[in-house]
Image (cartoon, rainbow, N blue to C red; front, top):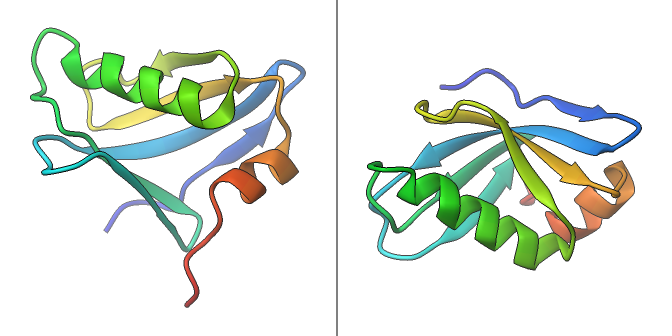
Length: 97
C-alpha cells in the first residue's frame, strides 16, 4: 500500500504524487482514496515511461505538465500547470467506494 497521495495547490498549478506501474497492457489512470496509480504501457528504460506519462497527462488536462521529481522512481510528482483542485477533480473523478 502506498502513502496517501498529496495534492498541493500552488501559484503555477497543482502538484500531484502518482504511482507508476510500467509494462501494462494499456495506459490508464486509476484514482481511489486520494491515490493515483498510472498504468503505463512503456518499459521503465531511457525515460520512456516518463515521456508517456507527460504526453498522456498533457492530452488529458490540455495544459503543460512537468515531472518535478521521481525521474527514476515509481513514485513521481507532476506539476499540472494552470489548473486548480476543482479542475483536477472533474478530470480525474474518484472511483466510488
